[in-house]
Length: 151
Image 1: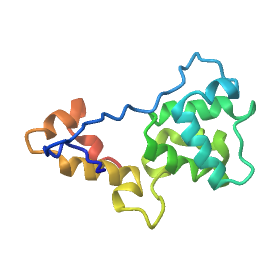
Image 2: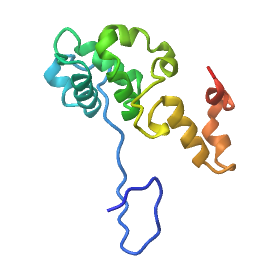
Image 3: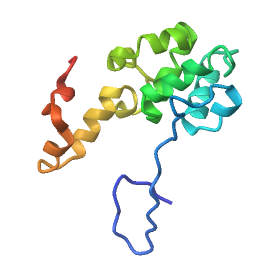
Image 4: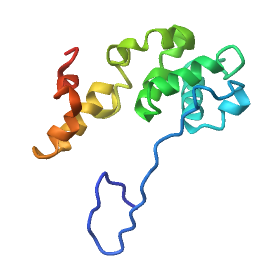
């Protein structure tokens, strides 16, 4: 078994597209049991429980956890990096500080590959995988300013 970001083009290859993590709707019920049905909430909760002993998804934090998952677009690496901050900030403060998510989520596990340590790392790594022809489309309407913002 092999995983790859692009087809390997070998005999017998089976391509399996991995769907994005599902997100709670802003108008969705914020009861913990209802939110736990969403894969983004489950991932964040599992990682927060591992990082912050005693953390549990409950009535007091469910709405903030749902907000975090939505603000981070359900991106697994972003959710994992954010979950490591729960121990020191708590979910409400973490959500309040997400306006500068690239600075807030600037450090990850030291033993992870550089592309998995920060949000900037994954963006830089992904950018480098693009061909010169693909980069203008990936830069989007901001002309690529996001790539250098805050650096």
